[in-house]
Length: 388
Picture 1 (tube, rainbow, N blue to C red):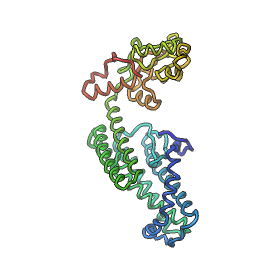
Picture 2: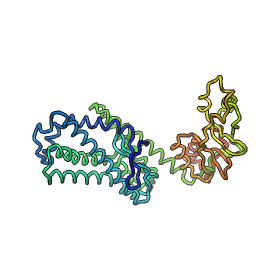
Picture 3: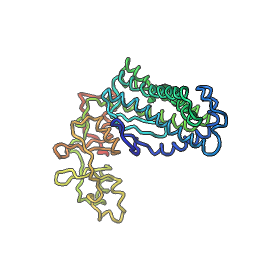
Picture 4: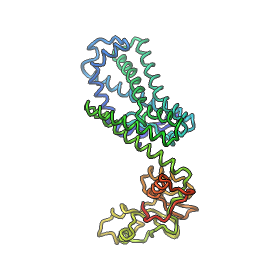
């Protein structure tokens, strides 16, 4: 998840996704509309003693809503730090923490693959939220605060507990779903545990979406959709990771002699004719035996038709070639493709082109293994097409 970097804490980059910038004022407005209705519940739970009507009028509700919304997202940030700092103690790197529409996301460099570690990491986020809730409640009970401050402190006490309880529901990949997967992984292989937890998460997402539609709570419907998609995606990613364990790029790539390349001197018109003839959508660009770029159908289509015989491949190719070594893990290569938004990678050894690996190659390998066709980690390299 991408966002605007706003700082770094404990070595972890903190980012704000654009959806956060939209939802923060919306949350502030929604909370401001509920200030009067929240006074009685907060008085009853925490004995705040806020007089009815003490918070109404003027811009006071909006100021309280803004303060409460900012405090809530800061609490979410602390929740994610609970996960992240413990994960770092277990040796897992954290790429970033991002605040977005539905709260926060801690992006791990790799997911925990040991069930005890995942169990502790998953629990620590809600534990931090409970700790914050208890801390805010203790302040509200022990200190005589002005009504406005008491409202914000009481609201954060309540919402942190609600955040902890909600996150512990078994909606994988939410915290409760990860706790469920960790417990299942203590008895079953990790891919099986992930599939079971993901199925529970998808059922939970369906129920949550149903409730959201009935109550016309479209934020809840959106969260349900996110949980469903994320559960499906992580289950598939885990299955692929398990299947490709021990497989290298060299096992699945199209080897150098079979890779179709193009010269930077080729015209764009000639390139398009060749793409139609050979049914390829991209080529490595080689000059003097060295890889100098990549050119795709999109690059060629950016040139107007009347100018395609005047422009050369060298004019439109991408020079920032994304490459891997033959010994790179197949899963690592797939992650590079996902991160860079490309469909294939050139395989380079000692500066020379030795092959080409595409997303299709990796998915074909996954299907072969899934169906029981793996044999000593070697796959058919003579695929029907060079697809990027």
